[in-house]
Image 1 (cartoon, rainbow, N blue to C red):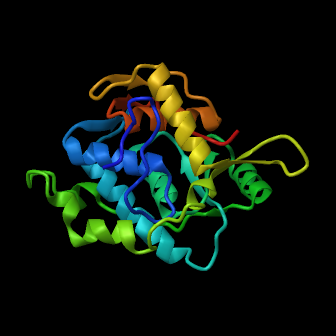
Image 2 (cartoon, rainbow, N blue to C red):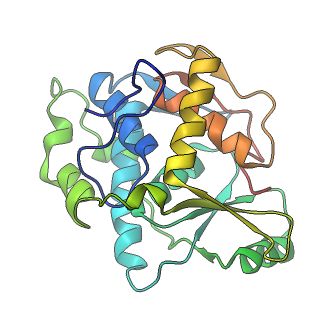
Length: 239
């Protein structure tokens, strides 16, 4: 089972589709505490069981919809439960994530996506509460639907940890910063340890930034089983 190593290092996932360790760590939290609140926003909330199943289903759908390309997938990040689900779905899909600031006007969103070579993630939605069966005493995640999301793209190789996990706008001639799955997992784990995050703790993202740091903070709360309090619009987003 994947989780945080005592020294703060994310254990390797047992099997997945080119995913980062953070996705597998969130899955592990969902297995242990499916009914625990994962995220609360001004408009909605979701448990770990619901979030894990919804992200897996959406990630599998994204792999099918974008099977012919390996470009970054853009997600509009507005701090909602749906947006966070999409963030995890892209990470689980094996595609690099590009989180777009929800407060940007349409023309700037398009310009930002073009600058990093991202395309909008296919519009695929699921009713998370319908899909998540959290009352079956710890067996719901062993269903065929759950396993399909884990295995349909095969087991990861030794190089998968160094595939791009997310991209962001940055300085330089390329205008693009790339963060690998290994780098993302290390940053998330380091923040979780330094902040002393623990299961059930309310982790308030009261000062989200339009940067990779906002995404790292969100994931650090989720991999440790915290209840993440999202302030609303504008997190996490591109640099």
